[in-house]
Image (cartoon, rainbow, N blue to C red; front, top):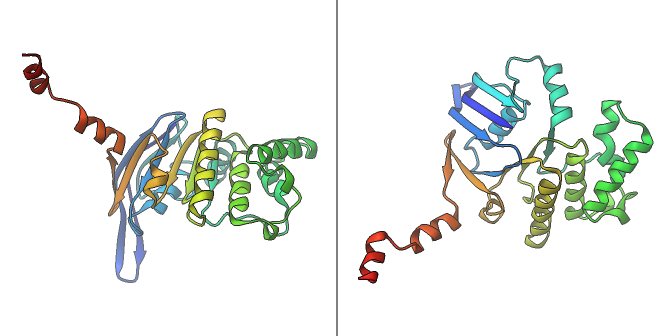
Length: 246
């Protein structure tokens, strides 16, 4: 569903070129849920922008659903994003003068492919999935932080994305609401089959995923999950087992 090949990225600064990503490679299967961890400044946000087609690498290629996007024009990439990609931003980015159901339905309205009735029905269904059916006419200023995040999640799923990116989806929430949001993402991921990629600083959030990647100084590597570590430690070796049998 997502493939990055030999990605290099740097930015120009008054002091010269600032390298961000080095020879980054990643394969993500359809329906997979992975987390990207790493300290601030390690290149996580740059990775997200390139993987979602919001930015272009200096070198390397990005494939989404088998289609190479790095050589495409912005309008072509925009079409792919609107049809296949969902994005959950850390600061929600809801439109202040639109209520919940209008915010959720906005991507379909922009596409121009759906009638108002269809948009409202689809948005209403998703708000019900995130337990906000009683808040559909509330403005963002009338919602709590957790409710705003649920609206943002519903909006990200409105176009049935094959690939969903989330940038610190629980970063502004307390632990209770954070757990609630993660469980909702898991439910939506399973019920809709979307591939989910989350950038997070929180190990507890990363533990929800099936695979954890770590970004350090622009280099991406796979981390071993706690469960796998426990299994390796607790599993007796053949030599120990054979001694017991004797």
